[in-house]
Every structure is written in C-alpha cells, then in structure tokens.
Length: 288
Length: 254
Image 1 (cartoon, one colour):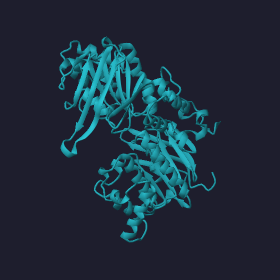
Image 2 (cartoon, rainbow over the protein chains, first blue to last red):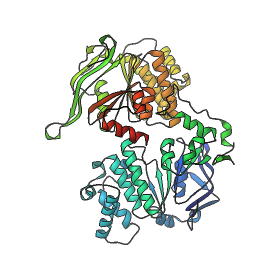
Image 3 (cartoon, chains in turn yellow, red):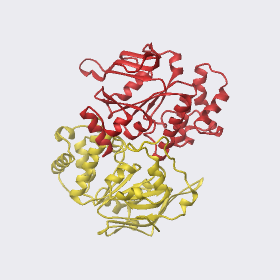
Image 4 (cartoon, chains in turn orange, red):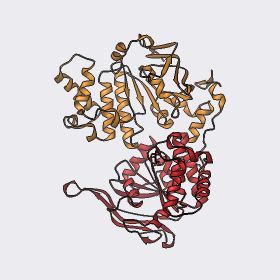
C-alpha cells in the first residue's frame, strides 16, 4: 500500500504471572495504509492486545517488545507517556465495542463530543459546541440539539455507537482502531453504522484497523484481512479473495459459520493442530 | 387459521398481548401474537431488538405473569403462574452463559438443584449421563463457572436444561455471546440433542443464518406484531409478502 501510516515489525507481547509466561502475541508484523484493514480471530487470539499495544494501553504485567512500531514519522516504541497522550484520540483513536460502557454516563452527549475536540485544540466552549453539533449531524443524527442534551442512557445502542464515531472522528485522526464496533448492535442498525463509518473514513482518507470475529462482515466491509491464531498472523489476504484462503485455520473458520444460502446438516468445527503455531503463514495465497 | 392438527400441538399462543407500565407510560410490547409449535418442531422468532421477541419467550417460560391472551401447552391452558409439571417439560437456555450460571456453585451443584426441586432419583447417574450427552467429561463436575470457557459454560447451561428430560427447550440467543467456531459446536450440539431426544425448540435470535440453520419455520416480528411466518427455504429464496421482511433480509445479507 502506498503512503503507509503504520508499520509494525515483530511485535511480541508476553504476560508474566505467578503461573508462568503467557505469550499473547507472537512476532506480528503488518502495515496499514489509508485503507480498511481487518483483524479477525477467536477470543484470546491476541487481536485486541495487538491494537492496545499500538496505543501503549497494555496492562502493566504485559511486556511489549518489537523491532519497529512506526506511525507516520513517530516512533511509537520510544514515545513517553506524555507524547502518547498527544497521540491518543488526536492521531490514533479507538472505537470500542459497547457504547453503554465506553461513554461517560454522567456527561451529556454534546459535552462529551465537544470535550474530545477541546482536549486537543485550544478553542472556546461555544466554538467546540458548534463543532460538536456539526459532527453529530454528519453521523446522521436528526434533531442534534435535543440529542446533545441527553445522557448516554437515554439513547439507543445504534445512536450511542454513532456518537462514539463522532467523538472519535472530531479531532480528525489519521488512524482509527475499531474494536468490534458493531457486535453489540442489531443487523439493521449495524448496516447503518457501518455505512456512516465508511462515509466518514472516505471523506478524510483515514486508515482503519477493524477488529472483528465476523468473517462475513469483514469480507464485505474491509480491503484486507489479517487472520490471527494463538497470537500469530497466520494469513493475510485481500478481503474479496477471502473465500480462496489457503491456511487451514482460515478455511475452518469460514466453514464453521452457518450460511443462509448453503444449508448444511452439521457445521464443521475447526480442529486445531499444534503445528499451526509454527507452520507456514500465507500472504495473498502464497506461503511465506 | 391453524394448519397444525390439535393432536400435534405442543405449544400454542393465542392473542398474546403484553404491556409494560400504566397510564400515559403504558407501552404495548407484544400485540396479539398467535403461533403454534408442533411436537418435535423447531421454530425461530427473529426481529430487531425491542420488537418483543424475548418478552414472548419470558412470558412463555412463566417469568412474566402479567399478560393477556392464552398460552396452551399440550392443549391445556396454562395459568400465568406455572406449576411444577410445566417446568419439568419446558426449560430455557439463556443468552449469556457468563451470567446464567451461579458463580459460587460447582457444575454438579448447579445440575443437582433441578433434580432436588423435582424430587428425581439417581442424582449422580443423571449428572454423569447429561454431562456426557453435552460432550463434557466427568472431570467437569468439580469446576466453578469461572474455570470454564464460554462454550463449556453454554454446554453446562444446556445440560442443566436437559437434566429434567423436558420436551421443549426455549432458546434465547444461545450463541450470540460466542465465537464463530464455538457457535458451530453449540449449534451442532443443539441439533444432535433435538434429533436424539425429539425435542421441540423455540429460538429467539436476530441472526438470520443461525435461525435458518437450526429452525424449519421462522416468524418475523416487528413492533410487537408477528408480521409473517415463513419456512426456512422461503427465507433463503426471499419469498416474502411483507416489505419489512424484505428490508430485514436485505440488511442481514448485505
């Protein structure tokens, strides 16, 4: 991909505890340009930890090491906590799974969105408020004046997620990390939220790192897919070629989901093989 | 118009109406819904959140007494407050296996509770049998829920429902909290159990692919009303009369 935003080389995350070492992420390398990249995998495969490490939000007991973590002209590895605070939300922002937990329950919607802008820019309250209202309008919220006055518990899940998107986009970041942004939403609302996200990304040429376990959704929404298994990226493939995936794990994941148009009596359950931890990885159908 | 002959009806809802609140805050959640499940059938209810599908399931399970209309089980009208015999026959599996098992009870204690309540014998043997049936070994008896994975917990929840040898299982989004690969395991388990034990399923979900995989008939709900009933094949081919169903199918596939 031309003009790469993010470059990660050999990222490792190890959790040390009294019970020994847990290698959560193993030698993960990838690049993100101004495109939509998905990371898929089961719970515990390390996809969320990979993204947390990019923002240096790994819990204290986790030990992060990498050969390279370059974001634009910034070397994330050597950034101090102070520098990271200027990056988080401003250059890289994160949309979390459930708006019910990630919005401040005691703050009105309008104030929350305005705060996201005021944290990174020196502007007056009134100016930030106008900007927040405009942003809420651009994520297709009708009657913004009244929504801005409400508290998070007074709006629906779909609207909450749109507020999250507005809040994350208002500082105009270069990269957005979305951690299962639609898995708490209904099918009908999911479609709407994704198309709004897509529209906003296209307008600003923002890069997206999309964490999900829904292969179907990812293959339609994203450009490239990284498949993670037990902390490794076992396959990297163009989203529209997902059906032709080479790694047995990707194939097993595809086969394990029920399909509307291909009814089967029994679903296939992935059988895990020990050699996937060391065996070949695939990029665009070619073994590495 | 009911196509299912009386002798084959397992569960029948007639004009079920449920409202919450009163006066100006009264909200009609379920609006005269009627449908019938035949013995051994699997029936799915789909719709977006807030359409009343889970409310129907809760009323049916006897968790909500305040409803109008009739609920019939084996052709006998049920009182809003159910008796023990009903619970012996109708059991429920909940959405979130992380919330539906008692955190301070080991698996065997959770499984023994329904046996004690219903005065059944052979506790130890029944617990072993049902654990094996859901694909867990005897070693799992002495585990607490926090020592189990999501899929294992849902297996225990299914075992807890099956231990009374019911004829009907009510499934409230049984796989939506699970990963795809684990979802496949649980769906396979559910279809095996139904085949082996001749169970009747009523499943509530918003995942179209899951519902057509497990259920032969699907009811589509919108704003508390049952819009229409379709066979799984008709859902696949998009043969529907209602505009809303068409939109819902399109949103699920896109």
